[in-house]
Length: 117
Ligand SMILES: [Cu+2]
Image (cartoon, rainbow, N blue to C red; front, side, top):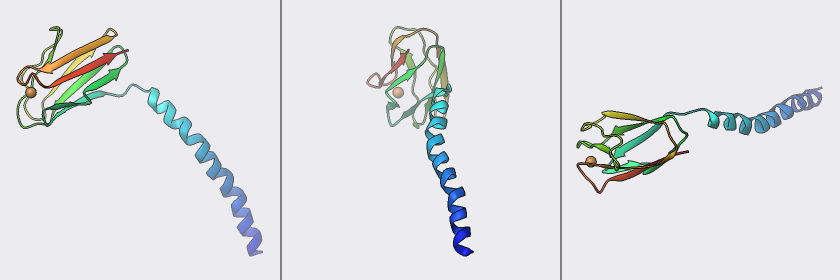
């Protein structure tokens, strides 16, 4: 009787475990296709990630995590933030595909790129 219950439980549990394993990657994949907010952290005098790839019409938000001000300035003058203090944010929406290089106008050695696909 006990043994029967054990195997009965196994018969129910095994397909459920298999289903969880099989279904999980599918769910993860569909999550990836959702537009996620694109964020660049400005930290320790660098941009993270230094190259960010986003689909067209994405809004990219820079957040300053340093305790010194930074300015987000595009190389070709397309966009420029005000001086961002700690935890200040700046957003820009990239309508067209292309590679957009930017730097910090206070610390020009800080450089980054947004690749719009
Ligand atoms: Cu800076």
